[in-house]
Length: 317
Ligand SMILES: NC(=O)c1ccc[n+]([C@@H]2O[C@H](COP(=O)([O-])OP(=O)(O)OC[C@H]3O[C@@H](n4cnc5c(N)ncnc54)[C@H](O)[C@@H]3O)[C@@H](O)[C@H]2O)c1
Image (cartoon, rainbow, N blue to C red):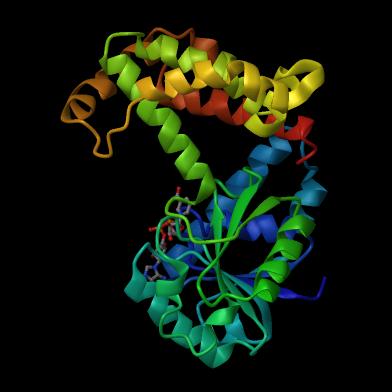
């Protein structure tokens, strides 16, 4: 594919993104302002691909072919010359992202699109000083982007549908699962869902209704395991039997409303949570058998290996 994609900056997120686009067959440029950063990105990519080779997802030849599509530069003009799409992975600060947009507008072709990886900033604000804000959108990944399929595409006030369409096509070609937000939402869709579940878990644990360990189990072996297959819309369609979600809403509706009345509603993390939850998590981690992870290192290994198995089931590798 001769469309050039550039990934701006190589921190946690920017080190992983070149793999995403190279897997989609694009030629990717990783721009790093500092040489040491470029070296770190190369090391990250090599390690990430080695893990995938060790897990028999790619052969060494495939790894080399992916690597051959990624090039590096510390020269911003060269990074943006003839670029089709830019994935901006700069720190989460308006000034830094706005400053970059000046360079983007100076060196990139007029039709090029920029997706910001921002987790929480407003796209309209990021694009505030842009001459062509219509081509600036949000493209929010989940860490690490080369493994997690979800990408949340979001429009600012002035972003165009065309810019969203271009980004969506690129991510689909890269075997990701882009979703499109029709308006700016703090925390996008995924983080809001996580926040709602997390608040309720903390709340039930602090209330003494359930231990941290059992609350985690309830998510993993209850709704979580189903959510890894399909979302609550489709899950409840099945939950309603012949009548689908319509029947379910009628039957469960009144009970659901009484549960909702009882749910936590706080909007500031309670001090008690900051004091007690880390110890409770440490205790539950220690109690797990070694083979499913009982310290941070073994837990990470367990998560990543199982993640790859699930991704294979979803045909993502
Ligand atoms: N870390 C996550 O889990 C995560 C998840 C989703 C989205 N994001 C978003 O992705 C973006 C990047 O986050 P991150 O966690 O990778 O941050 P990071 O701090 O790890 O990486 C930012 C990189 O930008 C470089 N940088 C700083 N100033 C620069 C400049 N002026 N010019 C060029 N390079 C510069 C830094 O050296 C650093 O490597 C943020 O907007 C963040 O909100 C992060």
